[in-house]
Length: 306
Image (cartoon, rainbow, N blue to C red; front, side, top):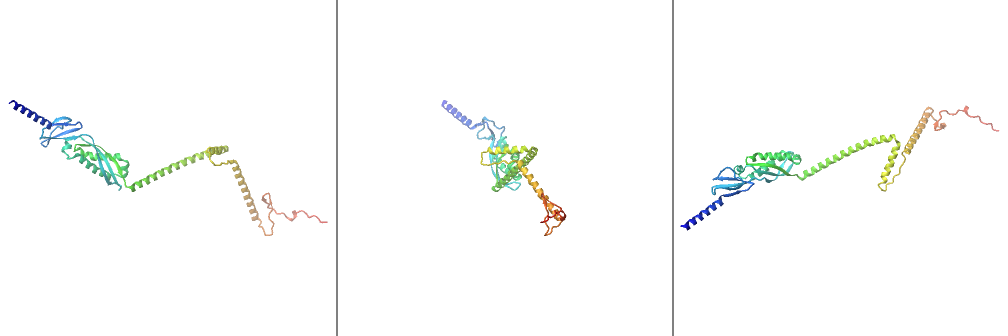
């Protein structure tokens, strides 16, 4: 009798242990447990820690509540300005309602992945190439809004969407490189022209200041000679007085003016008294043509010969 009681106790303890092992569940801190009893959702959702379910009746699914990083495969599309591009992105999302993530969608990860791909194709077709390259923040916000609206019904919240890379055809890359080079060349030419304009204004002011003091130009010449000599090169500099150049220039102008005056006077005399073949040339005194020719009465008398 005692042996039967002991055997029954042992069997009952074993059955209880098996039951406890089958009913015991542990939910981690970053998880939530959704219990389906005979296929029907029971509330509330089990929190982290130790919990019990009814074996063979209840079925618990654990849902990860951490932020999930999901890469979006590269999608090829045509932009609004008819440029073929290949764009890939990454999506950050998390489950905010474990019950909806289990009941409302079969596989929320696969659903978010497909929705990200279709949204990325849609945003490529609505955008221009310049926006994809330089205005990514706005495109990221548009992608997030497009994905977050249907994901809320699945118990999923899209935290962030980032466009990782935009691949362009080789011909487009070369065209953009030429455009950038032309832009930089134009900017350099404009800067150089502006510098030349400012330098010319300063040189004009310096010339006006030196014109008042002739010695300033001579001092500037000496400073230039000193600067060239400091380089220790083989250049030979011979200073030439500027005043001497001005004197020679004035002398040449005066000689040219006198020559022109004599030629004009000669032409005037020839015009008044046309010259003949036997006529004697007009005398020239002191570089000027004499208007009056000598007459017989003015000549001295010839001496009488013995």
